[in-house]
Image (tube, rainbow, N blue to C red; front, side, top):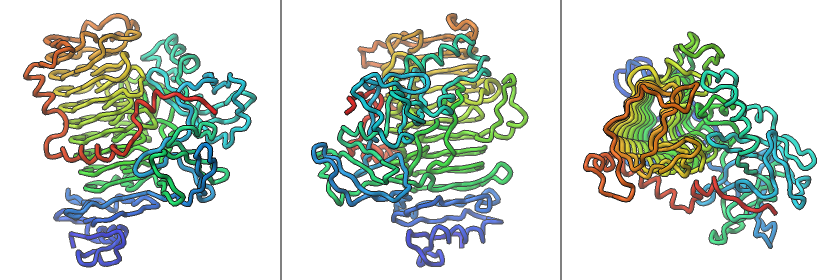
Length: 630
């Protein structure tokens, strides 16, 4: 039997007339997948598959002889994998403030909550609240009317700090007098290692760390005293009670149902370095409601090598050591982590035609938690890392909107240990920082990232966190092989003039940038950063025949003297177009028309945009809002 049929409550033998469970289907596959002569299809029928633990496939569940095992929807059906759990039986706690409460199971802790498909905000201070002052190790209370001695569940309080291009949240460790002291291990993660002196001199390192002390924006979260705005909630984990201040328009009642999730991974393709999983396709499934944590950073995400660590890799669709893996035509929404995450290593990875919205971290990320980090000169690939690359990645025709909510990160993130990456025809909008980027958290400066191509992508509403040194399309450490950025349509670089539309960062070499439309770009730079193009410590790049409505660009490309342009970067035949005019050249109009999803995948945008019509909180409000404490 090469076709196996599954339903949420199946109990049969896996035939079309007698469908089985997911676990039974896995058992049936293992009996026939050792010497395959054609693909095996596991068809998931209509309905919601409520999961409390991940559905795990390993090396034993791989396809053989180059044929795939396809776990996907039955024709015409929409199977839903859900981690949703319900909170109800509410009672009115504070009549004057219209705050309700409900009991939850003892010992339960979660960081995300949804009502009627809308993500709700944990009780918070907003950014830079009056009466609080940022310090290196925490926050001081300078308003004598604020009594933090009455605050409860101290270790559940989160303090977020964001400054220029960095954001790292920490939990409160203790209260001393009128000071909130942060977890010391987390504070240590703000630092930039000495080994990054290959890029930054000692004075710059000191300057960067001083930003945390003097210039960071701060916000406090999960404090009952900040439960003042409609749509906010607070979890008292010690008493196992949740509090909620509903919108008046919600018609909130005692039997209203909230959704939370403690499930972090729906499907785990769990290969290992020595026994990878291969020849698997995940197709046509909707994944909704998973939990996660605000702590740490999305894998591979930092713009510079801080000591911050990514959380444990347990994301909605988690693929460890995957070869010949396709993720095709799925929908991810209301996710408390990364939506799709590849770890360890991989080859021939295709992510095609998926939709993403309401994602706490990255929509798509690739990172190696098994990479060996060394302080040696980074002019070569260390032998112990040589077989840990991702190689052969195609990310095409995906629609991503409202991602990176918690980690203030990019929509697509891949590590510097990646080669032969194609990012084509994706549409990315409303993200806090960058649309597409690779990280350089492992200080892999040279002879690592190679053969990267971004083409025909449509990018808009990036940089919504109002931070600097971000923008649209970004590459760093890319200096092996031929790479290019072409035929992309970038509409805006973000809220800050310190952002770039197209950005080549440290040690990027030999990239061709051509036929891109950069519209609504910064008209001035701040602190010497920002414009339609940014070239930072990068050389021998060729930039030609692009259209832009800004004359502002940056070329700071010599590591020891960042005030002088590199003589090796070649810019020619780039066309300035007046910002006031809509009459773009025909060639530019063709790029604007054809960038983004091809017609076959346009329906994905409608699905995602319809979901976000449920009165969601715009990202710009999340990152700029301030309010008063009670």
